[in-house]
Length: 472
Image 1 (cartoon, rainbow, N blue to C red):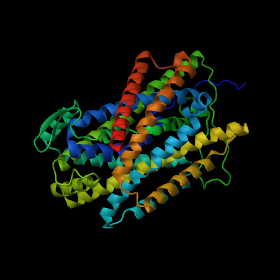
Image 2 (image 1 turned 180 degrees about the vertical axis):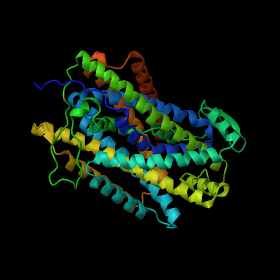
Image 3 (image 1 turned 90 degrees about the vertical axis):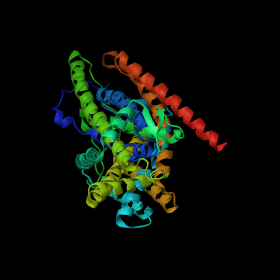
Image 4 (image 1 turned 30 degrees about the vertical axis):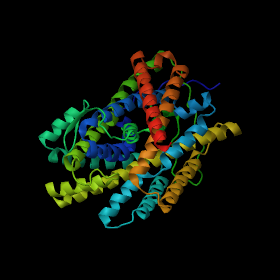
């Protein structure tokens, strides 16, 4: 019987910052930079409410995932494996299918090819994939490398986008944004008014954007892994994963957390942690993510809505944005804008490949440990096997000429919306049955989770039904 340990004392706030930046960054390339601005370029700002609702839903979802990791000192996958024997194959399969399709890096490469004057972007995309593999392989610890890269890119790129949106948007644009936040919109060229959902919008694309208003799919669950590696709460007793080339032999890692004694002092310490991490995730993930989405949508509206070519079913609206920025300010700003988008998309794919590799590696390791009846495993090798497998899969798709960014992103996002519906139900049922009542969510949070679960379920079913109807 393992000795129960006390819940650690709260650490300074500056040391807590980190995991929320990574979770925020995972959604920047797909939702914030591509899908929502694309929809706005075609349907205007009347759909902005969806981005607000989507990222708010994900805030509450992420916090319940974080609750488990804080208390147990392990990822949610460890707990789910104990309760559901089918969890391992489901999470490996749904993660690989949902995120193995390299739409984000395809978008980054396509914009980079425009900047460089190269007609074919698939070779750039393959180079970017290999570069991601090297970046994640060379760090002392994978988490440390990822956090440094993510913070640097977000703290440089995001303010630049804010600057452009505020400078270029007119008073009329800001009014349209205000109306859009409550679901009031108008379609060009006749300015036909609509409420919430405009006529002609693809439900699949809207669901994709909704799912990626934040992170989306199984990536939300990676928050529990980052919480553990950062040493939040009971994660203080866990071990970080080493870089591929930094140690001759990868150390064995214990995936299960240490049990908490749940004394009065431990519960008090948990509540202190909970208050601080709730604020940290609210400010970094929800507020920064929401501001980024809103201003990117506003920038897209100001520069592309009603413009010729902006309604094309690809990411050419980004090029249209840069041309308008060049005319309004200077060609230099248009070029910098495209460069920032390339880097933000690249960084998103970097984070996605790290998270998906961690998710699949941890699930695979859990099954392997169960079969061999071992308590520790060399997780690094499994992680890098999945990482380079994804890179190989993406490379094959590009060589086979599956390279259109928007199509790839939408397909992946619809799959991930369904995956998000599944894991929301599983994780919150686990929290109800595995955590002591003293540290469970209050009734009002539980009710919000139920509402989100129903919303995602109904929305996913309607979208899948509409798509199957087109096929048959």
